[in-house]
Image 1 (cartoon, rainbow, N blue to C red):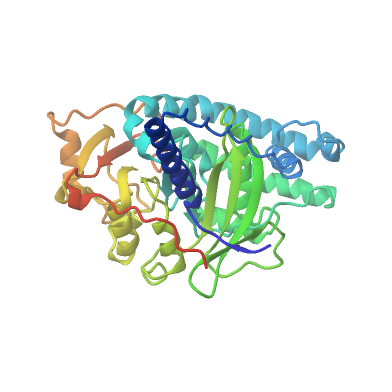
Image 2: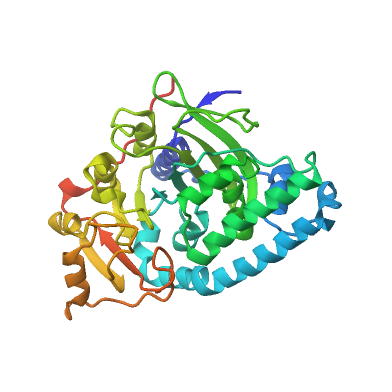
Length: 409
């Protein structure tokens, strides 16, 4: 059944319920009657066992599903599972574990405000988002890469499965070594149509992160500029960008599900306009923190000014490496800035993006630059990494406008 996607509707309903409960309590106090008992908390949604088992098997994790019992004995899967297990263990020890511990102390305020995490140019990198902002109820990932389909592993041939796990193993191993995806390598892999998009990669990170899958749904813009959400089904051909997918999942110990969106989209001005369906969708995110890593320095350029303006207008906090918004822009707008790690000349793939004012800030003995206890991003060989945490000015006219959901049709 098709329905129009309404972001933040649940929050508005919950807020209304809180106001009604408060009003009822106040009225009871005035009348001398006892206040009504609060409604019992809703049970967490059921995990979808078929989807969850597929995601787990695709991530190289052992399971008890009889559907994959024979497939778990295949040499290609066993080799992939060993490779993925070792790669994830090493990546967690070197990056994700230290990143989570660091963020708990340094990003506590941003974490509290990050109801939604906006992560442009990161592709399907859910692992870094969850390490830095595990409490975000909504995470929005995006990239040029297609959404793709989940693999039909049970009905495919052993040869096809071997090729699928070889491709997925190459993609994930590359990321676990560098901490970012190389777009051209991903696109080359996707053209072979075994791992044919970002969805299986996001599933890999979800299951390796210990999460359980509740639901997967497709998203597509409608003719009125809104968005249509439909149950997941396999697509015979890739839609035109923008389009997306929504995955609801449960983290261990969480009573309520969280949501990750992935949009296959172009954020350049010619495609990402203020009246575009994607811009309208993002405007409904509410209280938002933005994270940028290995972003190809796109936010430095005028042809990405619309998304840059959106980030500056709507974010309470901005966490980024030097590939994000230029340091001078944040200083000119009086954002509060903390610096971590070390600044170095951009890698040779990128020219005319060195920031001499940011270099000077890092070298200023009064700047109180703080250490960064993990490595990621373009300088994965030299391990000279930097992060900047910017907090928006307190002036009222600088506060982002948090809009409510659009009206139901």
